[in-house]
Image (cartoon, rainbow, N blue to C red; front, top):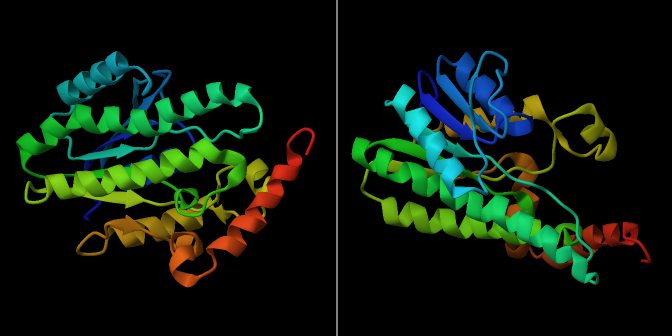
Amino acid sequence: MDITNRTVFIAGATSGIGLGLARRFAAAGGTVVVGGRRAASLDGLSVVELDVTDAGSVRRARDRVLESHPGLDVVITMSGVQLTEDLRDPGHFATAETTVETNLLGTIRVLDAFTPHLLARGAGTFVTVSSGIGFLPFPLMATYAATKAGVHAYTEALRAQLAGTGVEVTELVPPAVATTPEHKRLNPRAQDLDDYLDEVLGLLGQNPTPDEILVRGVLQHRWAERDGTYADLVAQRSQALTTLPGR
């Protein structure tokens, strides 16, 4: 994937990995539009209002983006929430609903909105965003893991259905990434954002573009079942459940 001079829309890129990617695409000569809940200026990037849990908001954002950028050729579905749950407490269901609406259905809404445009162009790229947790669950974030596994499966199906159309589909699979000093304090093993983005851009630049963008730090998650480390790693990650009230 040639990242230079692309016209890119990133849903949910007002902070973190999404904002980092937006800056990298812009620095490479691209035109970048960011979708966020508030349409405020951001580091010189164009921002459109977007709530991926609202189908009408997604359609309005699409129409605004395509009206001003009819040459759009890259769509990245970055929107997501990462929430903890106590599955012994029935009250967790509201958190589960929010997570599914945002992470999984929100991704599908954005993909559906822009698929006709990229198909009409006969070229372009979708980049979905799953997570290492989609392959190696973190039990404290049960529905988050389920939605990211769902994004992976949906991405595989989308790639198969768009084969031969000229539209490529790539899945970004992040490990834990420290996007703020506080994140790094809470998880010292998280990869620094700039290091992560360096690896991502290097992998995106390969020809052909990999179906999955797997940086070194996520390989143990992606291949845990194959490597026979899955049960031990899930047990290790389950230790975080002791932080729940009453555990």
